[in-house]
Length: 250
Image 1: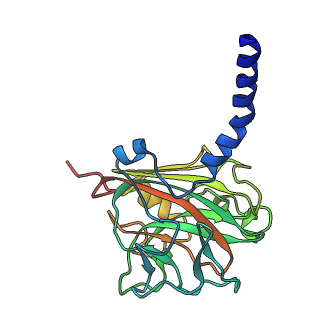
Image 2: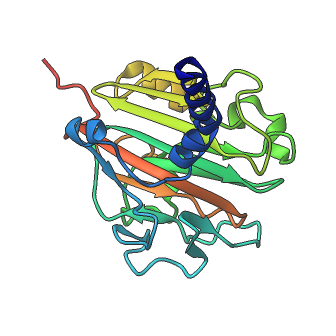
């Protein structure tokens, strides 16, 4: 009888395991005690746009909405209208993780080290971009350095790292002193120096060559791009490492 009881309990635990796992998965926009102890913070609380503003300094565009714990861009014009959503804080060296999901044929990005300076009009004139794309359904999918996960127009990610349109992808960005790395779904997609001659040469060979402020700042805003196409975000978490992304000169 005791043996049978133990067997029944074991079966019950096994049968509950998927439910427990799903319950854990179903709690986005939260942090563990370990994450808090390591200095992580939520940039998106899952309820509202607290901590975010429009790139021009005003209130967020009405195209950005919070729905069922996700931060969504509902725009469908297919054009960049300047409605990029940016953090109220500025960051230098940091680690960022988030989940993103793009619609079929969609295009977006996570920009960072960006600033709004009078001589520029668009955020991409200063900020670097971790590309978000439906590789299979968007014309940019034919350009290797524009694939999802790329440091846009500057690196080429491995083929097939992005999941299909409508699926959640997990991105990680690590900005250290003089070095930038990106991952998509656990696979490295970019690893470059920053602020040195090699970086300047890389920029000079890209479409940003004629943008004098691009990739020149030691710190800046983090932005979710309004490319005029639906995209969703959740679990946006950040850990500050230092005040500057540029290695101190000796």
